[in-house]
Image (tube, rainbow, N blue to C red; front, side, top):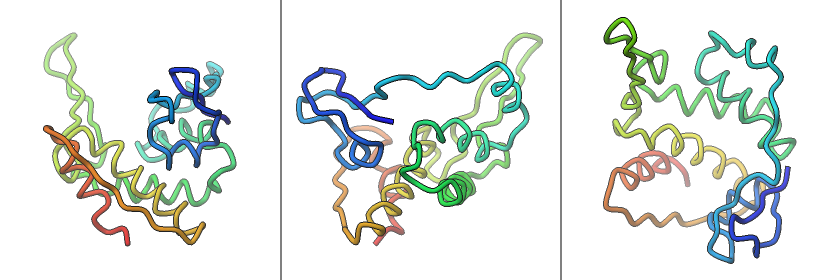
Length: 156
């Protein structure tokens, strides 16, 4: 799958190139060139899957063959295995028609943990394969910094 800039001026990139680039050269965000379509039976098969397996099934078409499925499965298990609740993001019923999705069970209690825990593992995997290193710099006024530091803390 190729990724294109939301501003239309950056070159199309592969999953790995877009992930490592962050922002496009034209200042846009990289988004998929096309969105994968899940058939109704594929969506039905997702019901009841543990969060890490659900993430794997949804991520697979976006990652394509850039990362072997076994490695991607391991990374999703490791990333979401850091969460304090077995459901990762439990859906809690508050009333007859009122539900809340709890996004605070990650290592830093921030919803950003959902992305950062996996992103750190994906980047570490790709950089190791290439024999490269990267420095991650994060400036934030919110909880992104803490989630990023925690996620990348164990990366060399």
